[in-house]
Image (cartoon, rainbow, N blue to C red; front, side, top):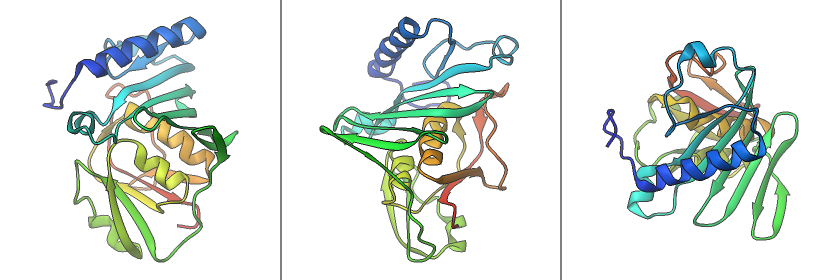
Length: 219
């Protein structure tokens, strides 16, 4: 267990090693911030224009439960904004990627297709965390028909491909939890903001973020 009492597995550490090695081999000039990496002093990283922000295993609790609802999250950041997001689901080998300037895509088996958020404004499907169920107080302002609970960054993907319409989280997250999902969501035509409507800020001195909401532009 980590200092915040969240679980840590050998898979988290091994995934970190493999991903960092691959990125450093392909793009040696681009620095990396990883959940399982060394804490990089803010004075060093605050001036980075381009960097990778990764969560080698998002959904460790789901990994431990062996329910398959865990992902690998890799985001390319430019000027502290996610411009490319990659989310891989190891158990199903489904791959999502996207960014505001390129659109959003899903590869399943041998088929690759573009994905878009829904345009629904009523009868909505909300998706929330399996390990943090009950975060629904603020959903009362929306016309929610049903709620789905699922682990990891799969929630971003469900909104991005229009299966769900809204993902609202009240509890705090770390920056590497959201960057890849935000890029894919925005590539699919969605919007992610802090609960007060402001834009998410990345590469802060303290990389803890507050709650957020992901919706289509109609909401």
